[in-house]
Length: 162
Image 1 (tube, rainbow, N blue to C red):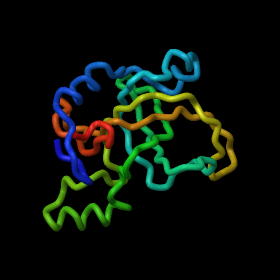
Image 2 (tube, rainbow, N blue to C red):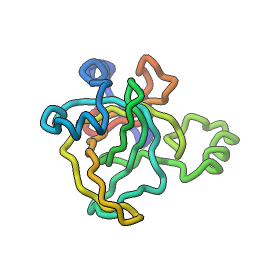
Image 3 (tube, rainbow, N blue to C red):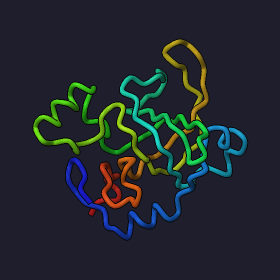
Image 4 (cartoon, rainbow, N blue to C red):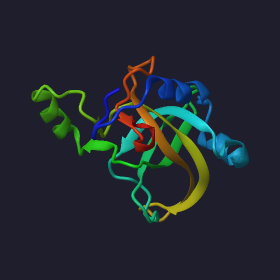
């Protein structure tokens, strides 16, 4: 269970999170019944946005866009206790691969599955001045899309590491 920045999470802890996660979460389901989703562990696939669209958040965050298991759109503000993105762009990723480090961290454009706990929605202003209401996620785990059995997380919350 390797994690950039050190530390490991036990297989049992990871399995517990995976087993309790809802694969059905979407923005629409959150807007229809926010109380049902607050505090629920969810999972969806997507990618971390290098240039986020939100201007009005007062603490470090990232934005993940993607879809749930049914193909419904998910767009969330993500709070993580350590940085997730390690490469600024595809050129950095190519440089890592040339050094033989093709599994290092998460780069912009990487398709990942993220697990986290849903918090209430926040009203935000985008770079173009549009007001949006986006769900918030406290990030727990991230896996590469091809890791179908959730065995090798590429990012683990500090709270889960031993």
